[in-house]
Image (cartoon, rainbow, N blue to C red):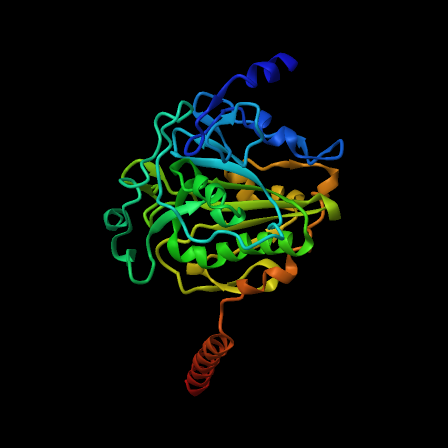
Length: 346
């Protein structure tokens, strides 16, 4: 191991826009410790011929033994990430963070996966009518966008934020879905800022979304549309964790209203976000039927108990207006009464 670090001092790559290393356990997950206690029981790896690990860090030149800002496990068959990992740190006290977004780009460094998606050609929304048919509607945000796994708003400096704008960090995400998913992302950042301590996050995709006839959806005939997005979050300081899971909403039933995380009522087209303890989620059918690459949080995260530390920051998930809900109940009651009266009459 010492030979590796001595060798690494003399090797670096221009990592302003590209990955600087491919061993995600070494560049990131092995370093997730509180004192001498690891956050993960088993460090996450990205092994196999069909996978590519990518480590990203800010800087003109990054030594190969540097700690990653975020790391990606990219699937070369589906052309989307299986999962990414990052630590959300509280914003510095000496000024505001950068805002806005840089342009998207493709990974073209020495660790670039082959094949990989093309952020422009594969995600061109005007081509999606071929797979969405009548459900494609640009004005209603009914299309698949470039969905960050590690979001740019998790970071403060413009250079850090720019790093996340890369094709290896995105998967097709129903644009309207981002209404609720961004609430989860923002909750983690607001909590870290308010509490002044780091939060450990692993975000991933799972399964394959299908059309109404059961055909797997692929952008440009290449990029798999995931059925699920998920985000596992741990704050070791309070020995607490939870996982957020949502189906990537596509096609019909976009106006359907259902209950989700903490009992909040949500509109399906905006994403029904559910939350569980990590252990409880592993017992659910959707986990068992799909390929979720979940982290193995250790005892310092109490994976058997659903954490409540983010509850105060999740209120934005309730995107159903009370008047709309009341109007829906009134219509249901009216129809019910008409049916009963008709039955009595005859």
